[in-house]
Structures are given as C-alpha cells and as structure tokens.
Amino acid sequence: MTTQRLTRNALLTAVSLILFTVEAQIPVPVPIPGVKLGLANIVNVWAVCAIGPRDALSILLCRIVLGAFFVGHLMVLFYSLAGGLLSWCVLLLLRRVTTRRQIWIRGVLAAIAHNLGQIAVAVWVTRSAAVLAYLPFLTLSGMVTGGFTGLCAQYLLSRRLS
Image (cartoon, rainbow, N blue to C red):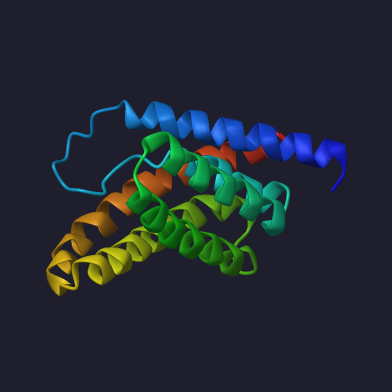
C-alpha cells in the first residue's frame, strides 16, 4: 500500500468516525432500538464507488472496530460487523447493475441490508424471533436514511472528490 493510499484511507476512516461520534449525540425522534441516521455510511457508499471495494472494506472495518472501542460495548462490534459487512456486500453487487445516477438506490438497499444483518445478530443473541417485529420499522427507516446517505454520496461523487 502506498503512503498516499494509506493516508487517504486513514483520513476517510477519521471522517467516518467523526460522523459516527456526532451521530451518537443526535437524539433519535423514534423510540425504536436500532434506528439512526447512518451518517458514517456516506463514507462507505462513496468509498465503494470512488476508490474501490478493497479500500472501502478496510475503512469500514477500521471504523467499526474503533467505533466499538469508543462506545465501549463489545456487542456493538458484533452488530456493526454483521450490518456493515452485509451492507458492503450489497454495495458490491449493486455496483454492477446501477449507474452513478442511481447511487441513492445503493444507499437504500445497503441500509436495509445493514438492518437485516443487525436483526440477524439480535435473533442469534436473544435466541428469540421476537426481535423480528422490529424489521418492518427498521426497513422503513433504512429506506429513508439510506436514501439520504445515498444522495449525499451521489452528490460527493458528482463533485469529483477522490
């Protein structure tokens, strides 16, 4: 890895962590566990499109590990890994079937995949399918917040930031 590439990835990880930390301070108006804006995912969606899947994955994994360390909960690591990796896989698949004008769609489907990954971990941890009751609410919130993060990434890509 070149110094320039390493520096770029470190800066993007820092931006992602800052967004993650700022978002943690924003009260969510919906009393449903797991609903949040997903601002750090703007960096992930942008990175997959602009710099490639391998670097996007390294940024994602660094943010997840460091974010869990900052929050101080080991379970955050499991939920974030499941959601983040599933979201990253969806972004990779959609790269082949969507254009740069449809990045917002990638954001929506990646957010829904993220929620599915987190629900899967919740079912595994609680050993109860009762948490599946949250799925419709998380899917709806994923559509809204994923559309926002996807539009933000699409806007950044249109500005030729890379």
